[in-house]
Image (tube, rainbow, N blue to C red; front, side, top):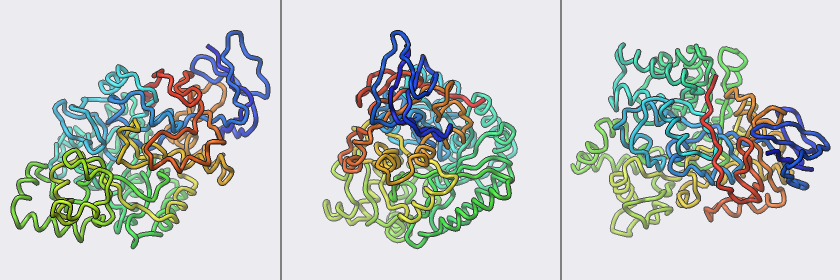
Length: 516
């Protein structure tokens, strides 16, 4: 059935449009945009006077593949105007994994109890769940390594390297938009640059994307960016630097150097390098990233057994107190299942509640919760965030994974408000709306060669957002409440209304997209 959106301010960076127009949708496509369109017989007419009509947002960096099948209505995405999630980031994807693989990616609040052998089988499972939003999958090199080597902290031999390449090639043949690495996480941290270059060979042949969570975003940031660029150039692939930032006050300002390195790489023209970012100076990650190198080489059971020994326990406590990437007084605990009263609280507030010091409480949480526990931590400076978000290659990526406000309680607010932080200032005239929409929709769609999304050109898929500028001023005040933002009045996915007058409709028209 046709839908006519009348008298809205249509903003589409792809076509250079910023004007009051009518927009006609029929079935799953945009039909036309013009100053005046007569409504077809039987068309639904939406009066968008005073509202802003935008292409649906493409979230360049998410981990929705670990949660969407359990919450396919994805209300946390819809209320942000997100119509497509790019998944498989930081080396994590639910495929290709052995069927019995349990716990991989568990700190994403995942309830997945097994892996899938390939993209086709995972996509078939997701289609049965009928998600509301579209999914554009990457394949995680951490999952590839886990499939072939398990958690082994060693390089692959020749046969294992060939098996890893075959898995990547298979995922690309099945439509993965590229690959990702997470070089700070287990098992990705065991992969050196030579291993990554080798496994990227099928990516180069397919002309797809390589996204990376850098090996070090703190003291080793510059070296890690250099490694990523040299790896991509040697492999001949486009490089996406994930959630680019400089961690730790001593490193603030270093993004000026790393962005210059990216500019220089792009001038050389050997590889196409871009960045994504989330609009917060705080971040969120799993508590396992606080542990000393090698702590998890034998898995969590071995770590817990060793931690019972006084010498090893003392070593862990000393590391957490003085050598971990975040100090105890910087950490806010996510949702704790074993210690519920710790959920959402600053670690320093827990000290003394049961006779434990800060680091003793932290070690207890790490050992009790394992990979499942997340934390909110300081990440970047405002100046670094401003510089990264203004870079010509920059695009938005929430780094979110939670699909409902209820599950986002105690977790990072980027799960609910990330796009709002980019769009609301633009709707209020404080920043460029063309630039905001380019970062939210157009740039990530083009990065993935999704030529018929991230745009409102006639013939494109009707992923459309209608936002209300009158509601923009009050959005940031709602973040601490962990309720949905109400900026979006209507949202369409593949031509179907999934938000209607600011309320979900229950329709679930999302698709698993495939690269061609």
